[in-house]
Image 1 (tube, rainbow, N blue to C red):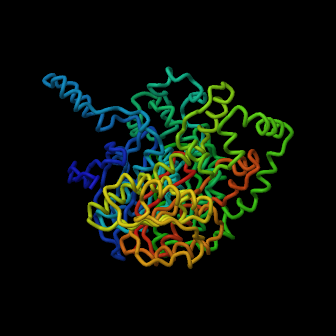
Image 2: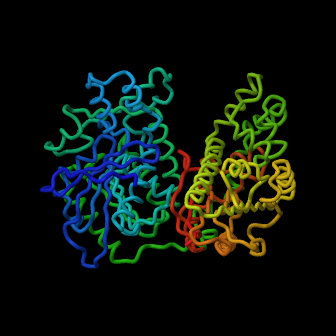
Length: 612
């Protein structure tokens, strides 16, 4: 269990402190206030607070008594620390404590000193922390995911909304208090500064009067008139991409959502907040304004009034059954369906004189200068040779112009996200297969869209054993290349490769049951949910109970139509199916989702589900 047993901090005040180890082995502190009274309906419920950039999880100890209108006494209440909060982490405390111990010899120092990694301190890392934390609490305390309410303030609200957007947890409700959908408190040109000036982070400042109007609570944020935190440029970049994603694609958030905001300033772009709210995919949503313009309203003089509004919202959510949209029909009636139908218009918006000059120049001169452009124009983005170039992530030209073009291509957000998605996908497959070996269960693997099978064969070859390997792909050229690869690897007795349509039930007639099924980069190619359901239900029918389904999704694109306009290719014309939508289809087909990874921009994801 990655979460430590909470250490009792003060039984009289009814809270405990604890630490859980996140996916990258970082220790994240949290606080737990124990449930005092039972709910009338007998349900076990939980509320999770996420503080802002200038606050801490511990600070909620000071204000929780004033938030009684939320009826928190009948829930387990948690506050989780976010990275880059400006408060020294437990890992750093241990490091300082160790440094003061003069008795340690050099060898012990080398082995025991915690290693700092500024790249870990990103908003996306905190999103993964929150996802892991809630899932652990759900299992450990036997609290159903539909009985969680998450409340975020300031930057914490951005974090919470990003989690719901990217991971689509089926929580009861989301409360965003003064969401910091603005520029943040750091220098606007921080990302343009030379690396040697920002390697130790950038100072982010905020006048205390922007955080609270309660004189008694101002020392929580700063000893003087200005709160100051150090954030990394990675955190700033991450924050900006999260804000962009939330404002442009809030239609993919279906959880009941309450937004409480002031009138806006440089920290809170009220136009962004209102756009985010108006485009929310949730039918159950509320917007409330309050007079004060603060980043941390739950620490303001109005916190009791705000708590009443939040309490009423939560009470109404529990009167009604959990909200379930019509996910099956979202291929016709949803924001993503509208965007898919508008793709041609999105492509046409790039039809400008200057854009066409650059495009024609790239098509004529690009292939001579850049291997990447040559491969995409000749074979397409999904071709094996192009894919290998992207996966290798190495420039294969010494021409300065070609190097510049290839670097831009390989570092493009979509290309980088796809590369990470592939690495995550096969890393997960290898881990699951090793788990089956440890459990002494058979490894019968089916890949319904294997391409030429190279990546799957490479993954299987690293295992101690496997029992059967069945590869399928709709493309005849891929199948032939895969058959040749199997012969070269001398795996003919354990693997077969045939052409089949993954959306036809007749493609799933097998003699044996599978324990692992891979569905990578295939559901994205079909906008129709009925076809996805046919594939998923057919997959479920040919799997053992407890078997693993590994599937990918492409829920978000920063610039729809841009790649298609540049390369004149329909490969990029896909419907960005929301994570909540695809997960719901997977659940309807007899699976239970257990895990997910995604890139920092939320462009691609890979998920694991277990056959029930």
